[in-house]
Length: 199
Image 1 (cartoon, rainbow, N blue to C red):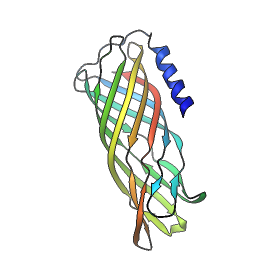
Image 2: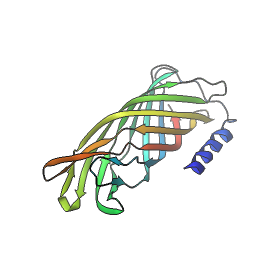
Image 3: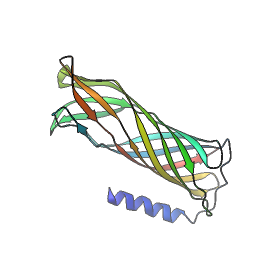
Protein backbone atom coordinates (compact mmCIF):
# COMPACT_ATOMS: atom_id res chain seq x y z
CA UNK A 1 0.00 0.00 0.00
CA UNK A 2 2.85 2.42 0.85
CA UNK A 3 4.55 1.75 -2.50
CA UNK A 4 1.26 2.37 -4.32
CA UNK A 5 0.74 5.66 -2.50
CA UNK A 6 4.28 6.83 -3.31
CA UNK A 7 3.79 5.89 -6.98
CA UNK A 8 0.52 7.80 -7.18
CA UNK A 9 2.08 10.86 -5.53
CA UNK A 10 4.92 10.73 -8.06
CA UNK A 11 2.43 10.72 -10.92
CA UNK A 12 0.74 13.79 -9.49
CA UNK A 13 4.06 15.64 -9.19
CA UNK A 14 5.11 14.74 -12.73
CA UNK A 15 1.79 15.87 -14.11
CA UNK A 16 1.76 19.16 -12.21
CA UNK A 17 3.74 20.91 -14.92
CA UNK A 18 1.16 20.07 -17.59
CA UNK A 19 -0.75 22.70 -19.49
CA UNK A 20 -3.50 24.27 -17.40
CA UNK A 21 -7.03 23.07 -17.98
CA UNK A 22 -9.97 25.42 -18.32
CA UNK A 23 -11.77 26.48 -15.15
CA UNK A 24 -14.80 24.50 -14.07
CA UNK A 25 -18.04 26.45 -14.27
CA UNK A 26 -21.63 25.80 -13.23
CA UNK A 27 -22.89 23.03 -15.50
CA UNK A 28 -19.47 21.47 -16.13
CA UNK A 29 -19.42 17.66 -16.14
CA UNK A 30 -16.34 15.59 -15.28
CA UNK A 31 -16.48 11.90 -16.19
CA UNK A 32 -13.80 9.71 -14.66
CA UNK A 33 -12.72 6.09 -15.07
CA UNK A 34 -10.68 4.64 -12.23
CA UNK A 35 -9.01 1.45 -11.10
CA UNK A 36 -9.83 1.13 -7.40
CA UNK A 37 -8.26 -1.09 -4.76
CA UNK A 38 -10.73 -2.22 -2.08
CA UNK A 39 -9.16 -2.86 1.33
CA UNK A 40 -11.79 -4.15 3.76
CA UNK A 41 -11.73 -3.49 7.51
CA UNK A 42 -13.33 -6.93 8.14
CA UNK A 43 -14.86 -6.46 11.58
CA UNK A 44 -17.64 -8.66 12.93
CA UNK A 45 -19.48 -9.42 16.15
CA UNK A 46 -20.51 -12.97 15.23
CA UNK A 47 -17.49 -14.76 16.69
CA UNK A 48 -16.84 -16.34 13.29
CA UNK A 49 -13.92 -14.04 12.37
CA UNK A 50 -15.59 -13.16 9.06
CA UNK A 51 -13.73 -11.43 6.23
CA UNK A 52 -13.86 -10.82 2.49
CA UNK A 53 -10.93 -10.72 0.09
CA UNK A 54 -9.36 -7.45 -0.99
CA UNK A 55 -9.47 -6.77 -4.72
CA UNK A 56 -9.00 -4.21 -7.48
CA UNK A 57 -12.15 -3.22 -9.36
CA UNK A 58 -13.26 -0.84 -12.14
CA UNK A 59 -15.17 2.31 -11.29
CA UNK A 60 -16.78 5.13 -13.23
CA UNK A 61 -18.08 8.37 -11.80
CA UNK A 62 -19.95 11.44 -12.96
CA UNK A 63 -19.22 14.76 -11.25
CA UNK A 64 -21.56 17.68 -11.91
CA UNK A 65 -20.46 21.20 -10.92
CA UNK A 66 -23.05 23.55 -9.42
CA UNK A 67 -20.33 26.23 -9.24
CA UNK A 68 -16.52 26.27 -9.74
CA UNK A 69 -16.12 24.89 -6.20
CA UNK A 70 -19.27 22.89 -5.38
CA UNK A 71 -20.05 19.60 -7.11
CA UNK A 72 -21.86 16.28 -6.66
CA UNK A 73 -20.29 12.95 -7.63
CA UNK A 74 -22.12 9.70 -8.41
CA UNK A 75 -19.81 6.66 -8.22
CA UNK A 76 -20.83 3.48 -10.04
CA UNK A 77 -19.40 0.03 -10.73
CA UNK A 78 -20.68 -3.40 -11.71
CA UNK A 79 -21.69 -6.03 -9.09
CA UNK A 80 -18.52 -7.29 -7.44
CA UNK A 81 -18.05 -10.92 -6.40
CA UNK A 82 -16.16 -11.49 -3.15
CA UNK A 83 -14.99 -14.60 -1.35
CA UNK A 84 -16.15 -14.87 2.27
CA UNK A 85 -13.94 -16.44 4.95
CA UNK A 86 -14.35 -17.56 8.55
CA UNK A 87 -10.79 -17.31 9.81
CA UNK A 88 -8.65 -18.85 7.06
CA UNK A 89 -11.46 -21.07 5.71
CA UNK A 90 -13.57 -19.98 2.74
CA UNK A 91 -17.24 -20.45 3.64
CA UNK A 92 -18.85 -19.02 0.53
CA UNK A 93 -19.20 -15.95 -1.64
CA UNK A 94 -21.41 -12.95 -2.30
CA UNK A 95 -21.89 -10.10 -4.73
CA UNK A 96 -22.31 -6.46 -3.80
CA UNK A 97 -23.29 -3.35 -5.75
CA UNK A 98 -22.20 -0.17 -3.92
CA UNK A 99 -23.29 3.09 -5.66
CA UNK A 100 -22.15 6.17 -3.75
CA UNK A 101 -23.24 9.81 -3.94
CA UNK A 102 -21.06 12.56 -2.44
CA UNK A 103 -21.19 16.33 -2.23
CA UNK A 104 -17.74 17.81 -2.88
CA UNK A 105 -15.90 21.07 -2.31
CA UNK A 106 -13.13 21.73 -4.88
CA UNK A 107 -10.27 24.05 -3.98
CA UNK A 108 -8.70 26.38 -6.54
CA UNK A 109 -4.96 26.27 -7.24
CA UNK A 110 -2.95 28.64 -9.39
CA UNK A 111 -1.55 25.88 -11.63
CA UNK A 112 -4.92 24.26 -12.34
CA UNK A 113 -4.68 21.43 -9.80
CA UNK A 114 -8.05 20.84 -8.09
CA UNK A 115 -7.93 19.13 -4.68
CA UNK A 116 -11.32 18.25 -3.23
CA UNK A 117 -13.05 16.89 -0.15
CA UNK A 118 -16.38 15.09 -0.18
CA UNK A 119 -18.96 13.45 2.05
CA UNK A 120 -22.14 11.60 1.24
CA UNK A 121 -24.11 8.37 1.33
CA UNK A 122 -23.35 4.84 0.19
CA UNK A 123 -26.02 2.26 -0.58
CA UNK A 124 -24.85 -1.34 -0.95
CA UNK A 125 -27.03 -4.16 -2.25
CA UNK A 126 -25.87 -7.70 -1.44
CA UNK A 127 -26.90 -10.50 -3.80
CA UNK A 128 -25.99 -14.08 -4.79
CA UNK A 129 -25.19 -14.79 -1.13
CA UNK A 130 -23.94 -18.37 -0.66
CA UNK A 131 -22.66 -18.98 2.88
CA UNK A 132 -22.13 -22.35 4.52
CA UNK A 133 -24.08 -24.08 1.77
CA UNK A 134 -27.19 -22.05 2.58
CA UNK A 135 -26.78 -22.38 6.33
CA UNK A 136 -26.27 -18.63 6.78
CA UNK A 137 -27.50 -15.47 5.09
CA UNK A 138 -27.02 -11.70 5.11
CA UNK A 139 -29.33 -8.72 5.30
CA UNK A 140 -29.46 -7.51 1.72
CA UNK A 141 -29.32 -3.70 2.09
CA UNK A 142 -26.76 -1.40 3.74
CA UNK A 143 -26.75 2.39 4.09
CA UNK A 144 -23.75 4.27 5.39
CA UNK A 145 -21.58 7.36 5.34
CA UNK A 146 -18.92 7.90 2.66
CA UNK A 147 -15.94 10.23 3.15
CA UNK A 148 -13.65 11.26 0.31
CA UNK A 149 -10.49 13.21 -0.56
CA UNK A 150 -8.81 13.52 -3.93
CA UNK A 151 -7.15 15.67 -6.53
CA UNK A 152 -7.56 16.29 -10.26
CA UNK A 153 -4.37 17.27 -12.08
CA UNK A 154 -4.63 18.75 -15.61
CA UNK A 155 -2.84 16.80 -18.33
CA UNK A 156 -4.28 18.79 -21.23
CA UNK A 157 -7.16 21.19 -21.88
CA UNK A 158 -9.97 18.82 -20.82
CA UNK A 159 -8.07 15.75 -19.57
CA UNK A 160 -7.19 15.14 -15.91
CA UNK A 161 -5.24 12.65 -13.85
CA UNK A 162 -7.27 11.73 -10.77
CA UNK A 163 -6.16 10.25 -7.45
CA UNK A 164 -8.93 9.54 -4.95
CA UNK A 165 -9.35 7.87 -1.57
CA UNK A 166 -12.65 7.02 0.13
CA UNK A 167 -13.69 5.54 3.44
CA UNK A 168 -17.08 3.88 3.01
CA UNK A 169 -19.13 2.48 5.88
CA UNK A 170 -20.82 -0.80 4.87
CA UNK A 171 -22.30 -3.28 7.32
CA UNK A 172 -24.84 -6.10 7.27
CA UNK A 173 -26.52 -8.43 9.73
CA UNK A 174 -25.57 -12.12 9.63
CA UNK A 175 -28.46 -14.56 9.97
CA UNK A 176 -28.33 -18.27 10.84
CA UNK A 177 -31.27 -20.56 11.65
CA UNK A 178 -33.58 -17.55 11.30
CA UNK A 179 -31.78 -15.55 14.00
CA UNK A 180 -29.48 -12.53 13.84
CA UNK A 181 -26.11 -13.75 15.15
CA UNK A 182 -24.18 -10.51 14.74
CA UNK A 183 -23.03 -7.75 12.43
CA UNK A 184 -20.33 -7.88 9.77
CA UNK A 185 -18.65 -4.57 8.91
CA UNK A 186 -16.83 -4.31 5.59
CA UNK A 187 -16.03 -0.57 6.01
CA UNK A 188 -13.44 -0.50 3.19
CA UNK A 189 -10.84 2.05 2.23
CA UNK A 190 -10.94 2.56 -1.54
CA UNK A 191 -7.79 3.92 -3.20
CA UNK A 192 -8.30 4.87 -6.84
CA UNK A 193 -6.34 6.30 -9.74
CA UNK A 194 -7.68 7.12 -13.18
CA UNK A 195 -8.44 9.69 -15.86
CA UNK A 196 -11.17 12.28 -16.07
CA UNK A 197 -12.68 14.02 -19.10
CA UNK A 198 -14.29 17.45 -18.75
CA UNK A 199 -17.39 18.27 -20.77
